[in-house]
Each structure stands twice: as structure tokens, then as C-alpha cells.
Amino acid sequence: MKITLLADDAIRLEPVSGPLTIEAPTAEMVYSPFHMLASSLAMCIFSVIESWATHAKRKIDDLTLEVRWKFADDPQRVSDIAVSFDWPSLPANRLAAARRVAELCTVHATLHHPPHISIEPSASANSAPAANPVSVA
Image (cartoon, rainbow, N blue to C red; front, side, top):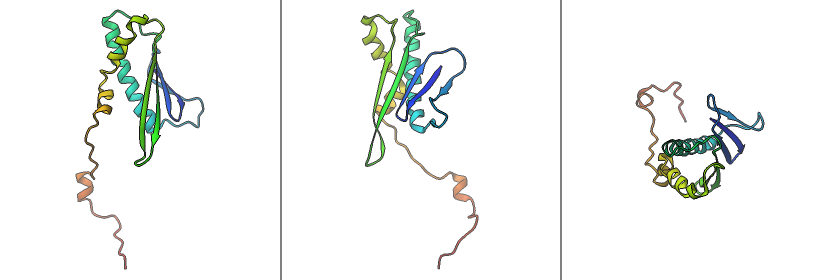
């Protein structure tokens, strides 16, 4: 599998043999948390499509996925995610089925029905003594 960073707001996932690789057009481009979010969605969608394709006896060698996103403010977040797939060997009459299968991805469902997220210090952080207490006068 290969993930290619296309821009600060886009990735492509392609099935290639060998270990998972992450590539960028320049050494300066960083694999950001947003790329990771998009990669998890792409990998999940690819996995469910791959499973369906195996049962339908369809090859996925030429399947590629692209994930693009937009940002919003108040609060700053990803506001829109667009996933597109290109699968030249899939007959046109099977495209709607492939789209429905892609929507079965658990990460897709999680983004549509977001979980409650709590952020708390760990128990060990609560019991640790202060390293250098500072008094404020």
C-alpha cells in the first residue's frame, strides 16, 4: 500500500505490493495529523472495498482513493472531507454498489456519529509531585 501526500489538504492511496509507504513530493512536506486522519479513512474504505471485491471476484489492482479536506474556524477543525475513487476495471454498473460498500467503513461511520472524547491527565500525572514548585508573590 502506498499513501502519497498530494498537498497539505490531500492524500492518495494506491495498492502496491510490499510494506506500507508514505511518500511526499518534497522532503519538506510533513505527514500531519490531518494526513493521518485522511489516511485512516482511506485505509478503512479500501479494506471494506477489498473485502467486497474479493467476494465479487473483482481485481483491485487499479483502485485508487483520494481524500481531500477543508478547514473551518470557530473552532478550528476539518469541516469537509471528500473521498473519491478511481477504479477503471470496475464495470460502470457496479460503481453505485462500490460506493455503498465504501460507506460501510467504520471510520466513515465514526466521523458521521462522532464519539465522546475526554482528555484528562493520567492517574500517574495526578499523583506525581511537582518538579520545581514556584511561588508567586
